[in-house]
Amino acid sequence: MQLGIPVPQVYIVPVERFCREMGPALGVNLAEFEFPAYFNFFVYKKRCTLVVDSEDAEDNIRKVFSETLLGPAQFRREEDPLAFEAEDFAKDFPRNAIPNFTKELKHFRIMPDGNELVIETLLEFRHFEMRSDGHEGLGVPPNAEGKVEEQGDGCKSEDEDCGAESDAEEEVPKDLQAVESREQATPWTYSQARFMGKF
Image 1: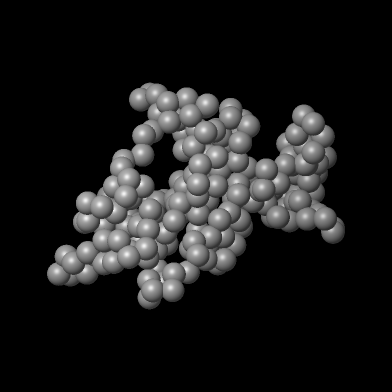
Image 2: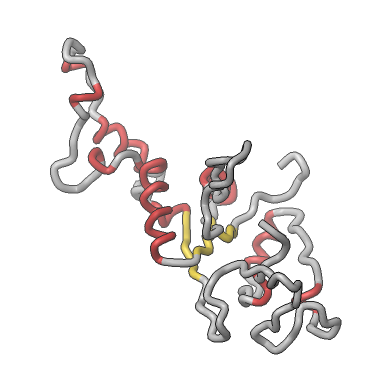
């Protein structure tokens, strides 16, 4: 934001969503999109698009995001919601002083227009389509010999005549209007979102 670069609205969620390597980055979240999703919704009035590799990844993200956005499930379920968890309070704590979390969470889920906030209000999920040429994973790096693999359209990434789409660097949008015009452009192909660098 200090550089003046717009907050992205499309995120490719890595297959490994947490760093599991020993070192200072151990346990770091590699798929941080929560606050960008809030920023895009409350400032741009738009949803973030998360590109994931599987239904399982989407389900896991939905479980975590629903808790952070809407609160614990036991306080917001439709049938027999809990007002509070008794074990969260000391036995001598006055019962009439315990807040009703069901009512409080519902209050914050209701938006100014009267609609109830749901995950789909902030997030849209998209899935990579499986390729038919043997590449079943996302972000497949070059092989050990450093050979460049042929792309799905028969073009090699090191060729000069692959076309402007694959080689040209995409300009970073300067403002909201540029972001909106980029959203209306043609969707990415797999070859355009191919592995770039070592992650």
